[in-house]
Length: 261
Image: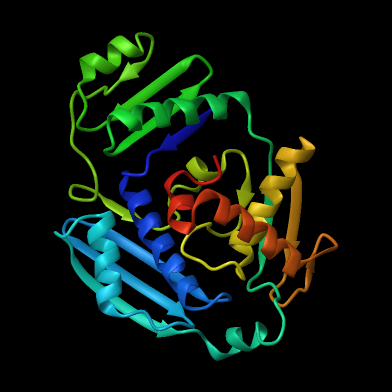
């Protein structure tokens, strides 16, 4: 059983904005520090950041307009990174937070639903969510012709309440609220989005996920803030694995669109 939401779901819009802010921070510093929380909906976008880099209001405005549209009033609250957290990263890359992590191999059912979600999103790039539970497929796709989707997926439950509109104009979205959609059966104590690679929530989650796909078994890990290794692997090496993964995906904003699969 698995649920996927597409990149236009309000929560994913929030994730994408947060990811774009991390991308922007990395254009200013190879080892930038960024934590961004985004809440968007009903005409208002609130963003709180803690970062080592100066990001101007106009830069944030441009990101929100590009991803969500220009109709949102922006409340942007920037903050410098806490001095104790900054000191932890001074001179050496160490775990930037505490965390527990479990990466699990992707199941055929999860891969199947991810393919279905992407296929529908190519036709309807608007808010949508999808569930696959054995043979039971549920499709809720906004701004779509329900009859057409029913023809394509005759055995599915399609838009049970009929045609609908969605997105952050009629609903709210918040960063890291759809981790089940992003991670499948994997487990984390934190969130994937809106954070730089020094945060174990990002780097160790990606590392465990990649290890689980390669070794075809669950990979578990835990860390304390300041740790220089996780599961016997230097944290700096884990960060570089995650960096290459993010670069391969196309950046933190692209990573936020679908998560790990």
